[in-house]
Amino acid sequence: MQFGNKQCYFDTPQIMGVLNVTPDSFSDGGQHNSIDDAVAQAQLMVDNGAVFIDVGGESTKPGAVAVGEQTELDRVVPVIEKIAANIDCIISIDTSKATVMQAAVHAGARLINDVCALQQPDALSTAAKLQVPVSLMHMQGEPRTMQETPEYGSVVGEVYEFLEARINACLGAGIKHEHIIVDPGFGFGKTLEHNYQLLKHFDKFQYLKVPTLAGMSRKSMVGNLLNRSVDDRLAGSLACALLACSKGASILRVHDVKETADIIKVFNKMNSTL
Ligand code: 7PM
Image 1 (spheres, protein in one colour):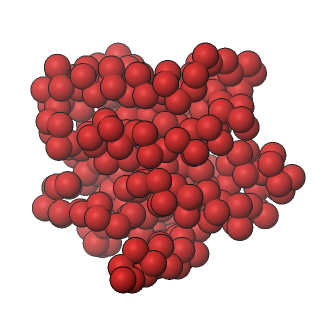
Image 2 (image 1 turned 30 degrees about the vertical axis):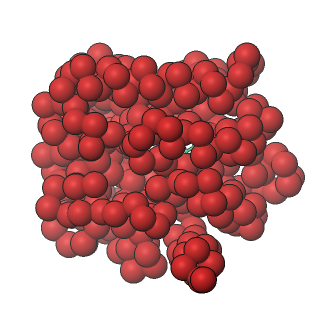
């Protein structure tokens, strides 16, 4: 897949490092300080094996309230500009807002990662116009309330059909098939059981004929199963990542890049051994 002037092959799983640029994520000792902190963290993740850096300025955690457009722009644009100028990686913008997509791509982002799958006003037409790859994620409900009562007949079937419909919407809007990635959206309007059904059947999403992204790092599907706090979920997250690899995941969206790079090496070694 082509991201600007960078080619990325998904013959082996690739790592997307999570870079949250919300105020709670960085010691806010002034604007410049927090920008430099974010860029330094991105550099560390790239040094440790991340190919993508996913920059997010809007918290999409369950129960989170939406942030304003200008706030999100002020957070992400300076960080994207500085990463684009200094680090050899593919910058992904984690947003659902058309204006933020536009500004982020202008600043140097080369992948639009939208947890709303381009369903917000103007998002589909804007992404089509920008001509960069897009990642389409499934979510049931909206972040503020999605974890209250998730319900499905068949979670795998319903997520699959949603992603198929969004692929078709993208194609209809003029987005190229070679520019589409799909993601079942672990933790977004799903119970523990739903999340593990999606993991067990992650291989089914390959029938959509586009690369797949899995984001399970530090999520409640690890924490609630194991009874671990957010900072004690590494082993569980790595187990999820390895299982996603074995079921064909193209991109792993993770916080712990160095450790995830190690498990991918183990996975690749097994696959290349006769
Ligand atoms: C709870 C739910 C806590 C989600 C934190 C999060 C994904 C994403 C996020 C994902 C794609 C987090 C998140 N998760 N984008 N953005 N896929 N494509 O772990 O699973 O940071 S937010």
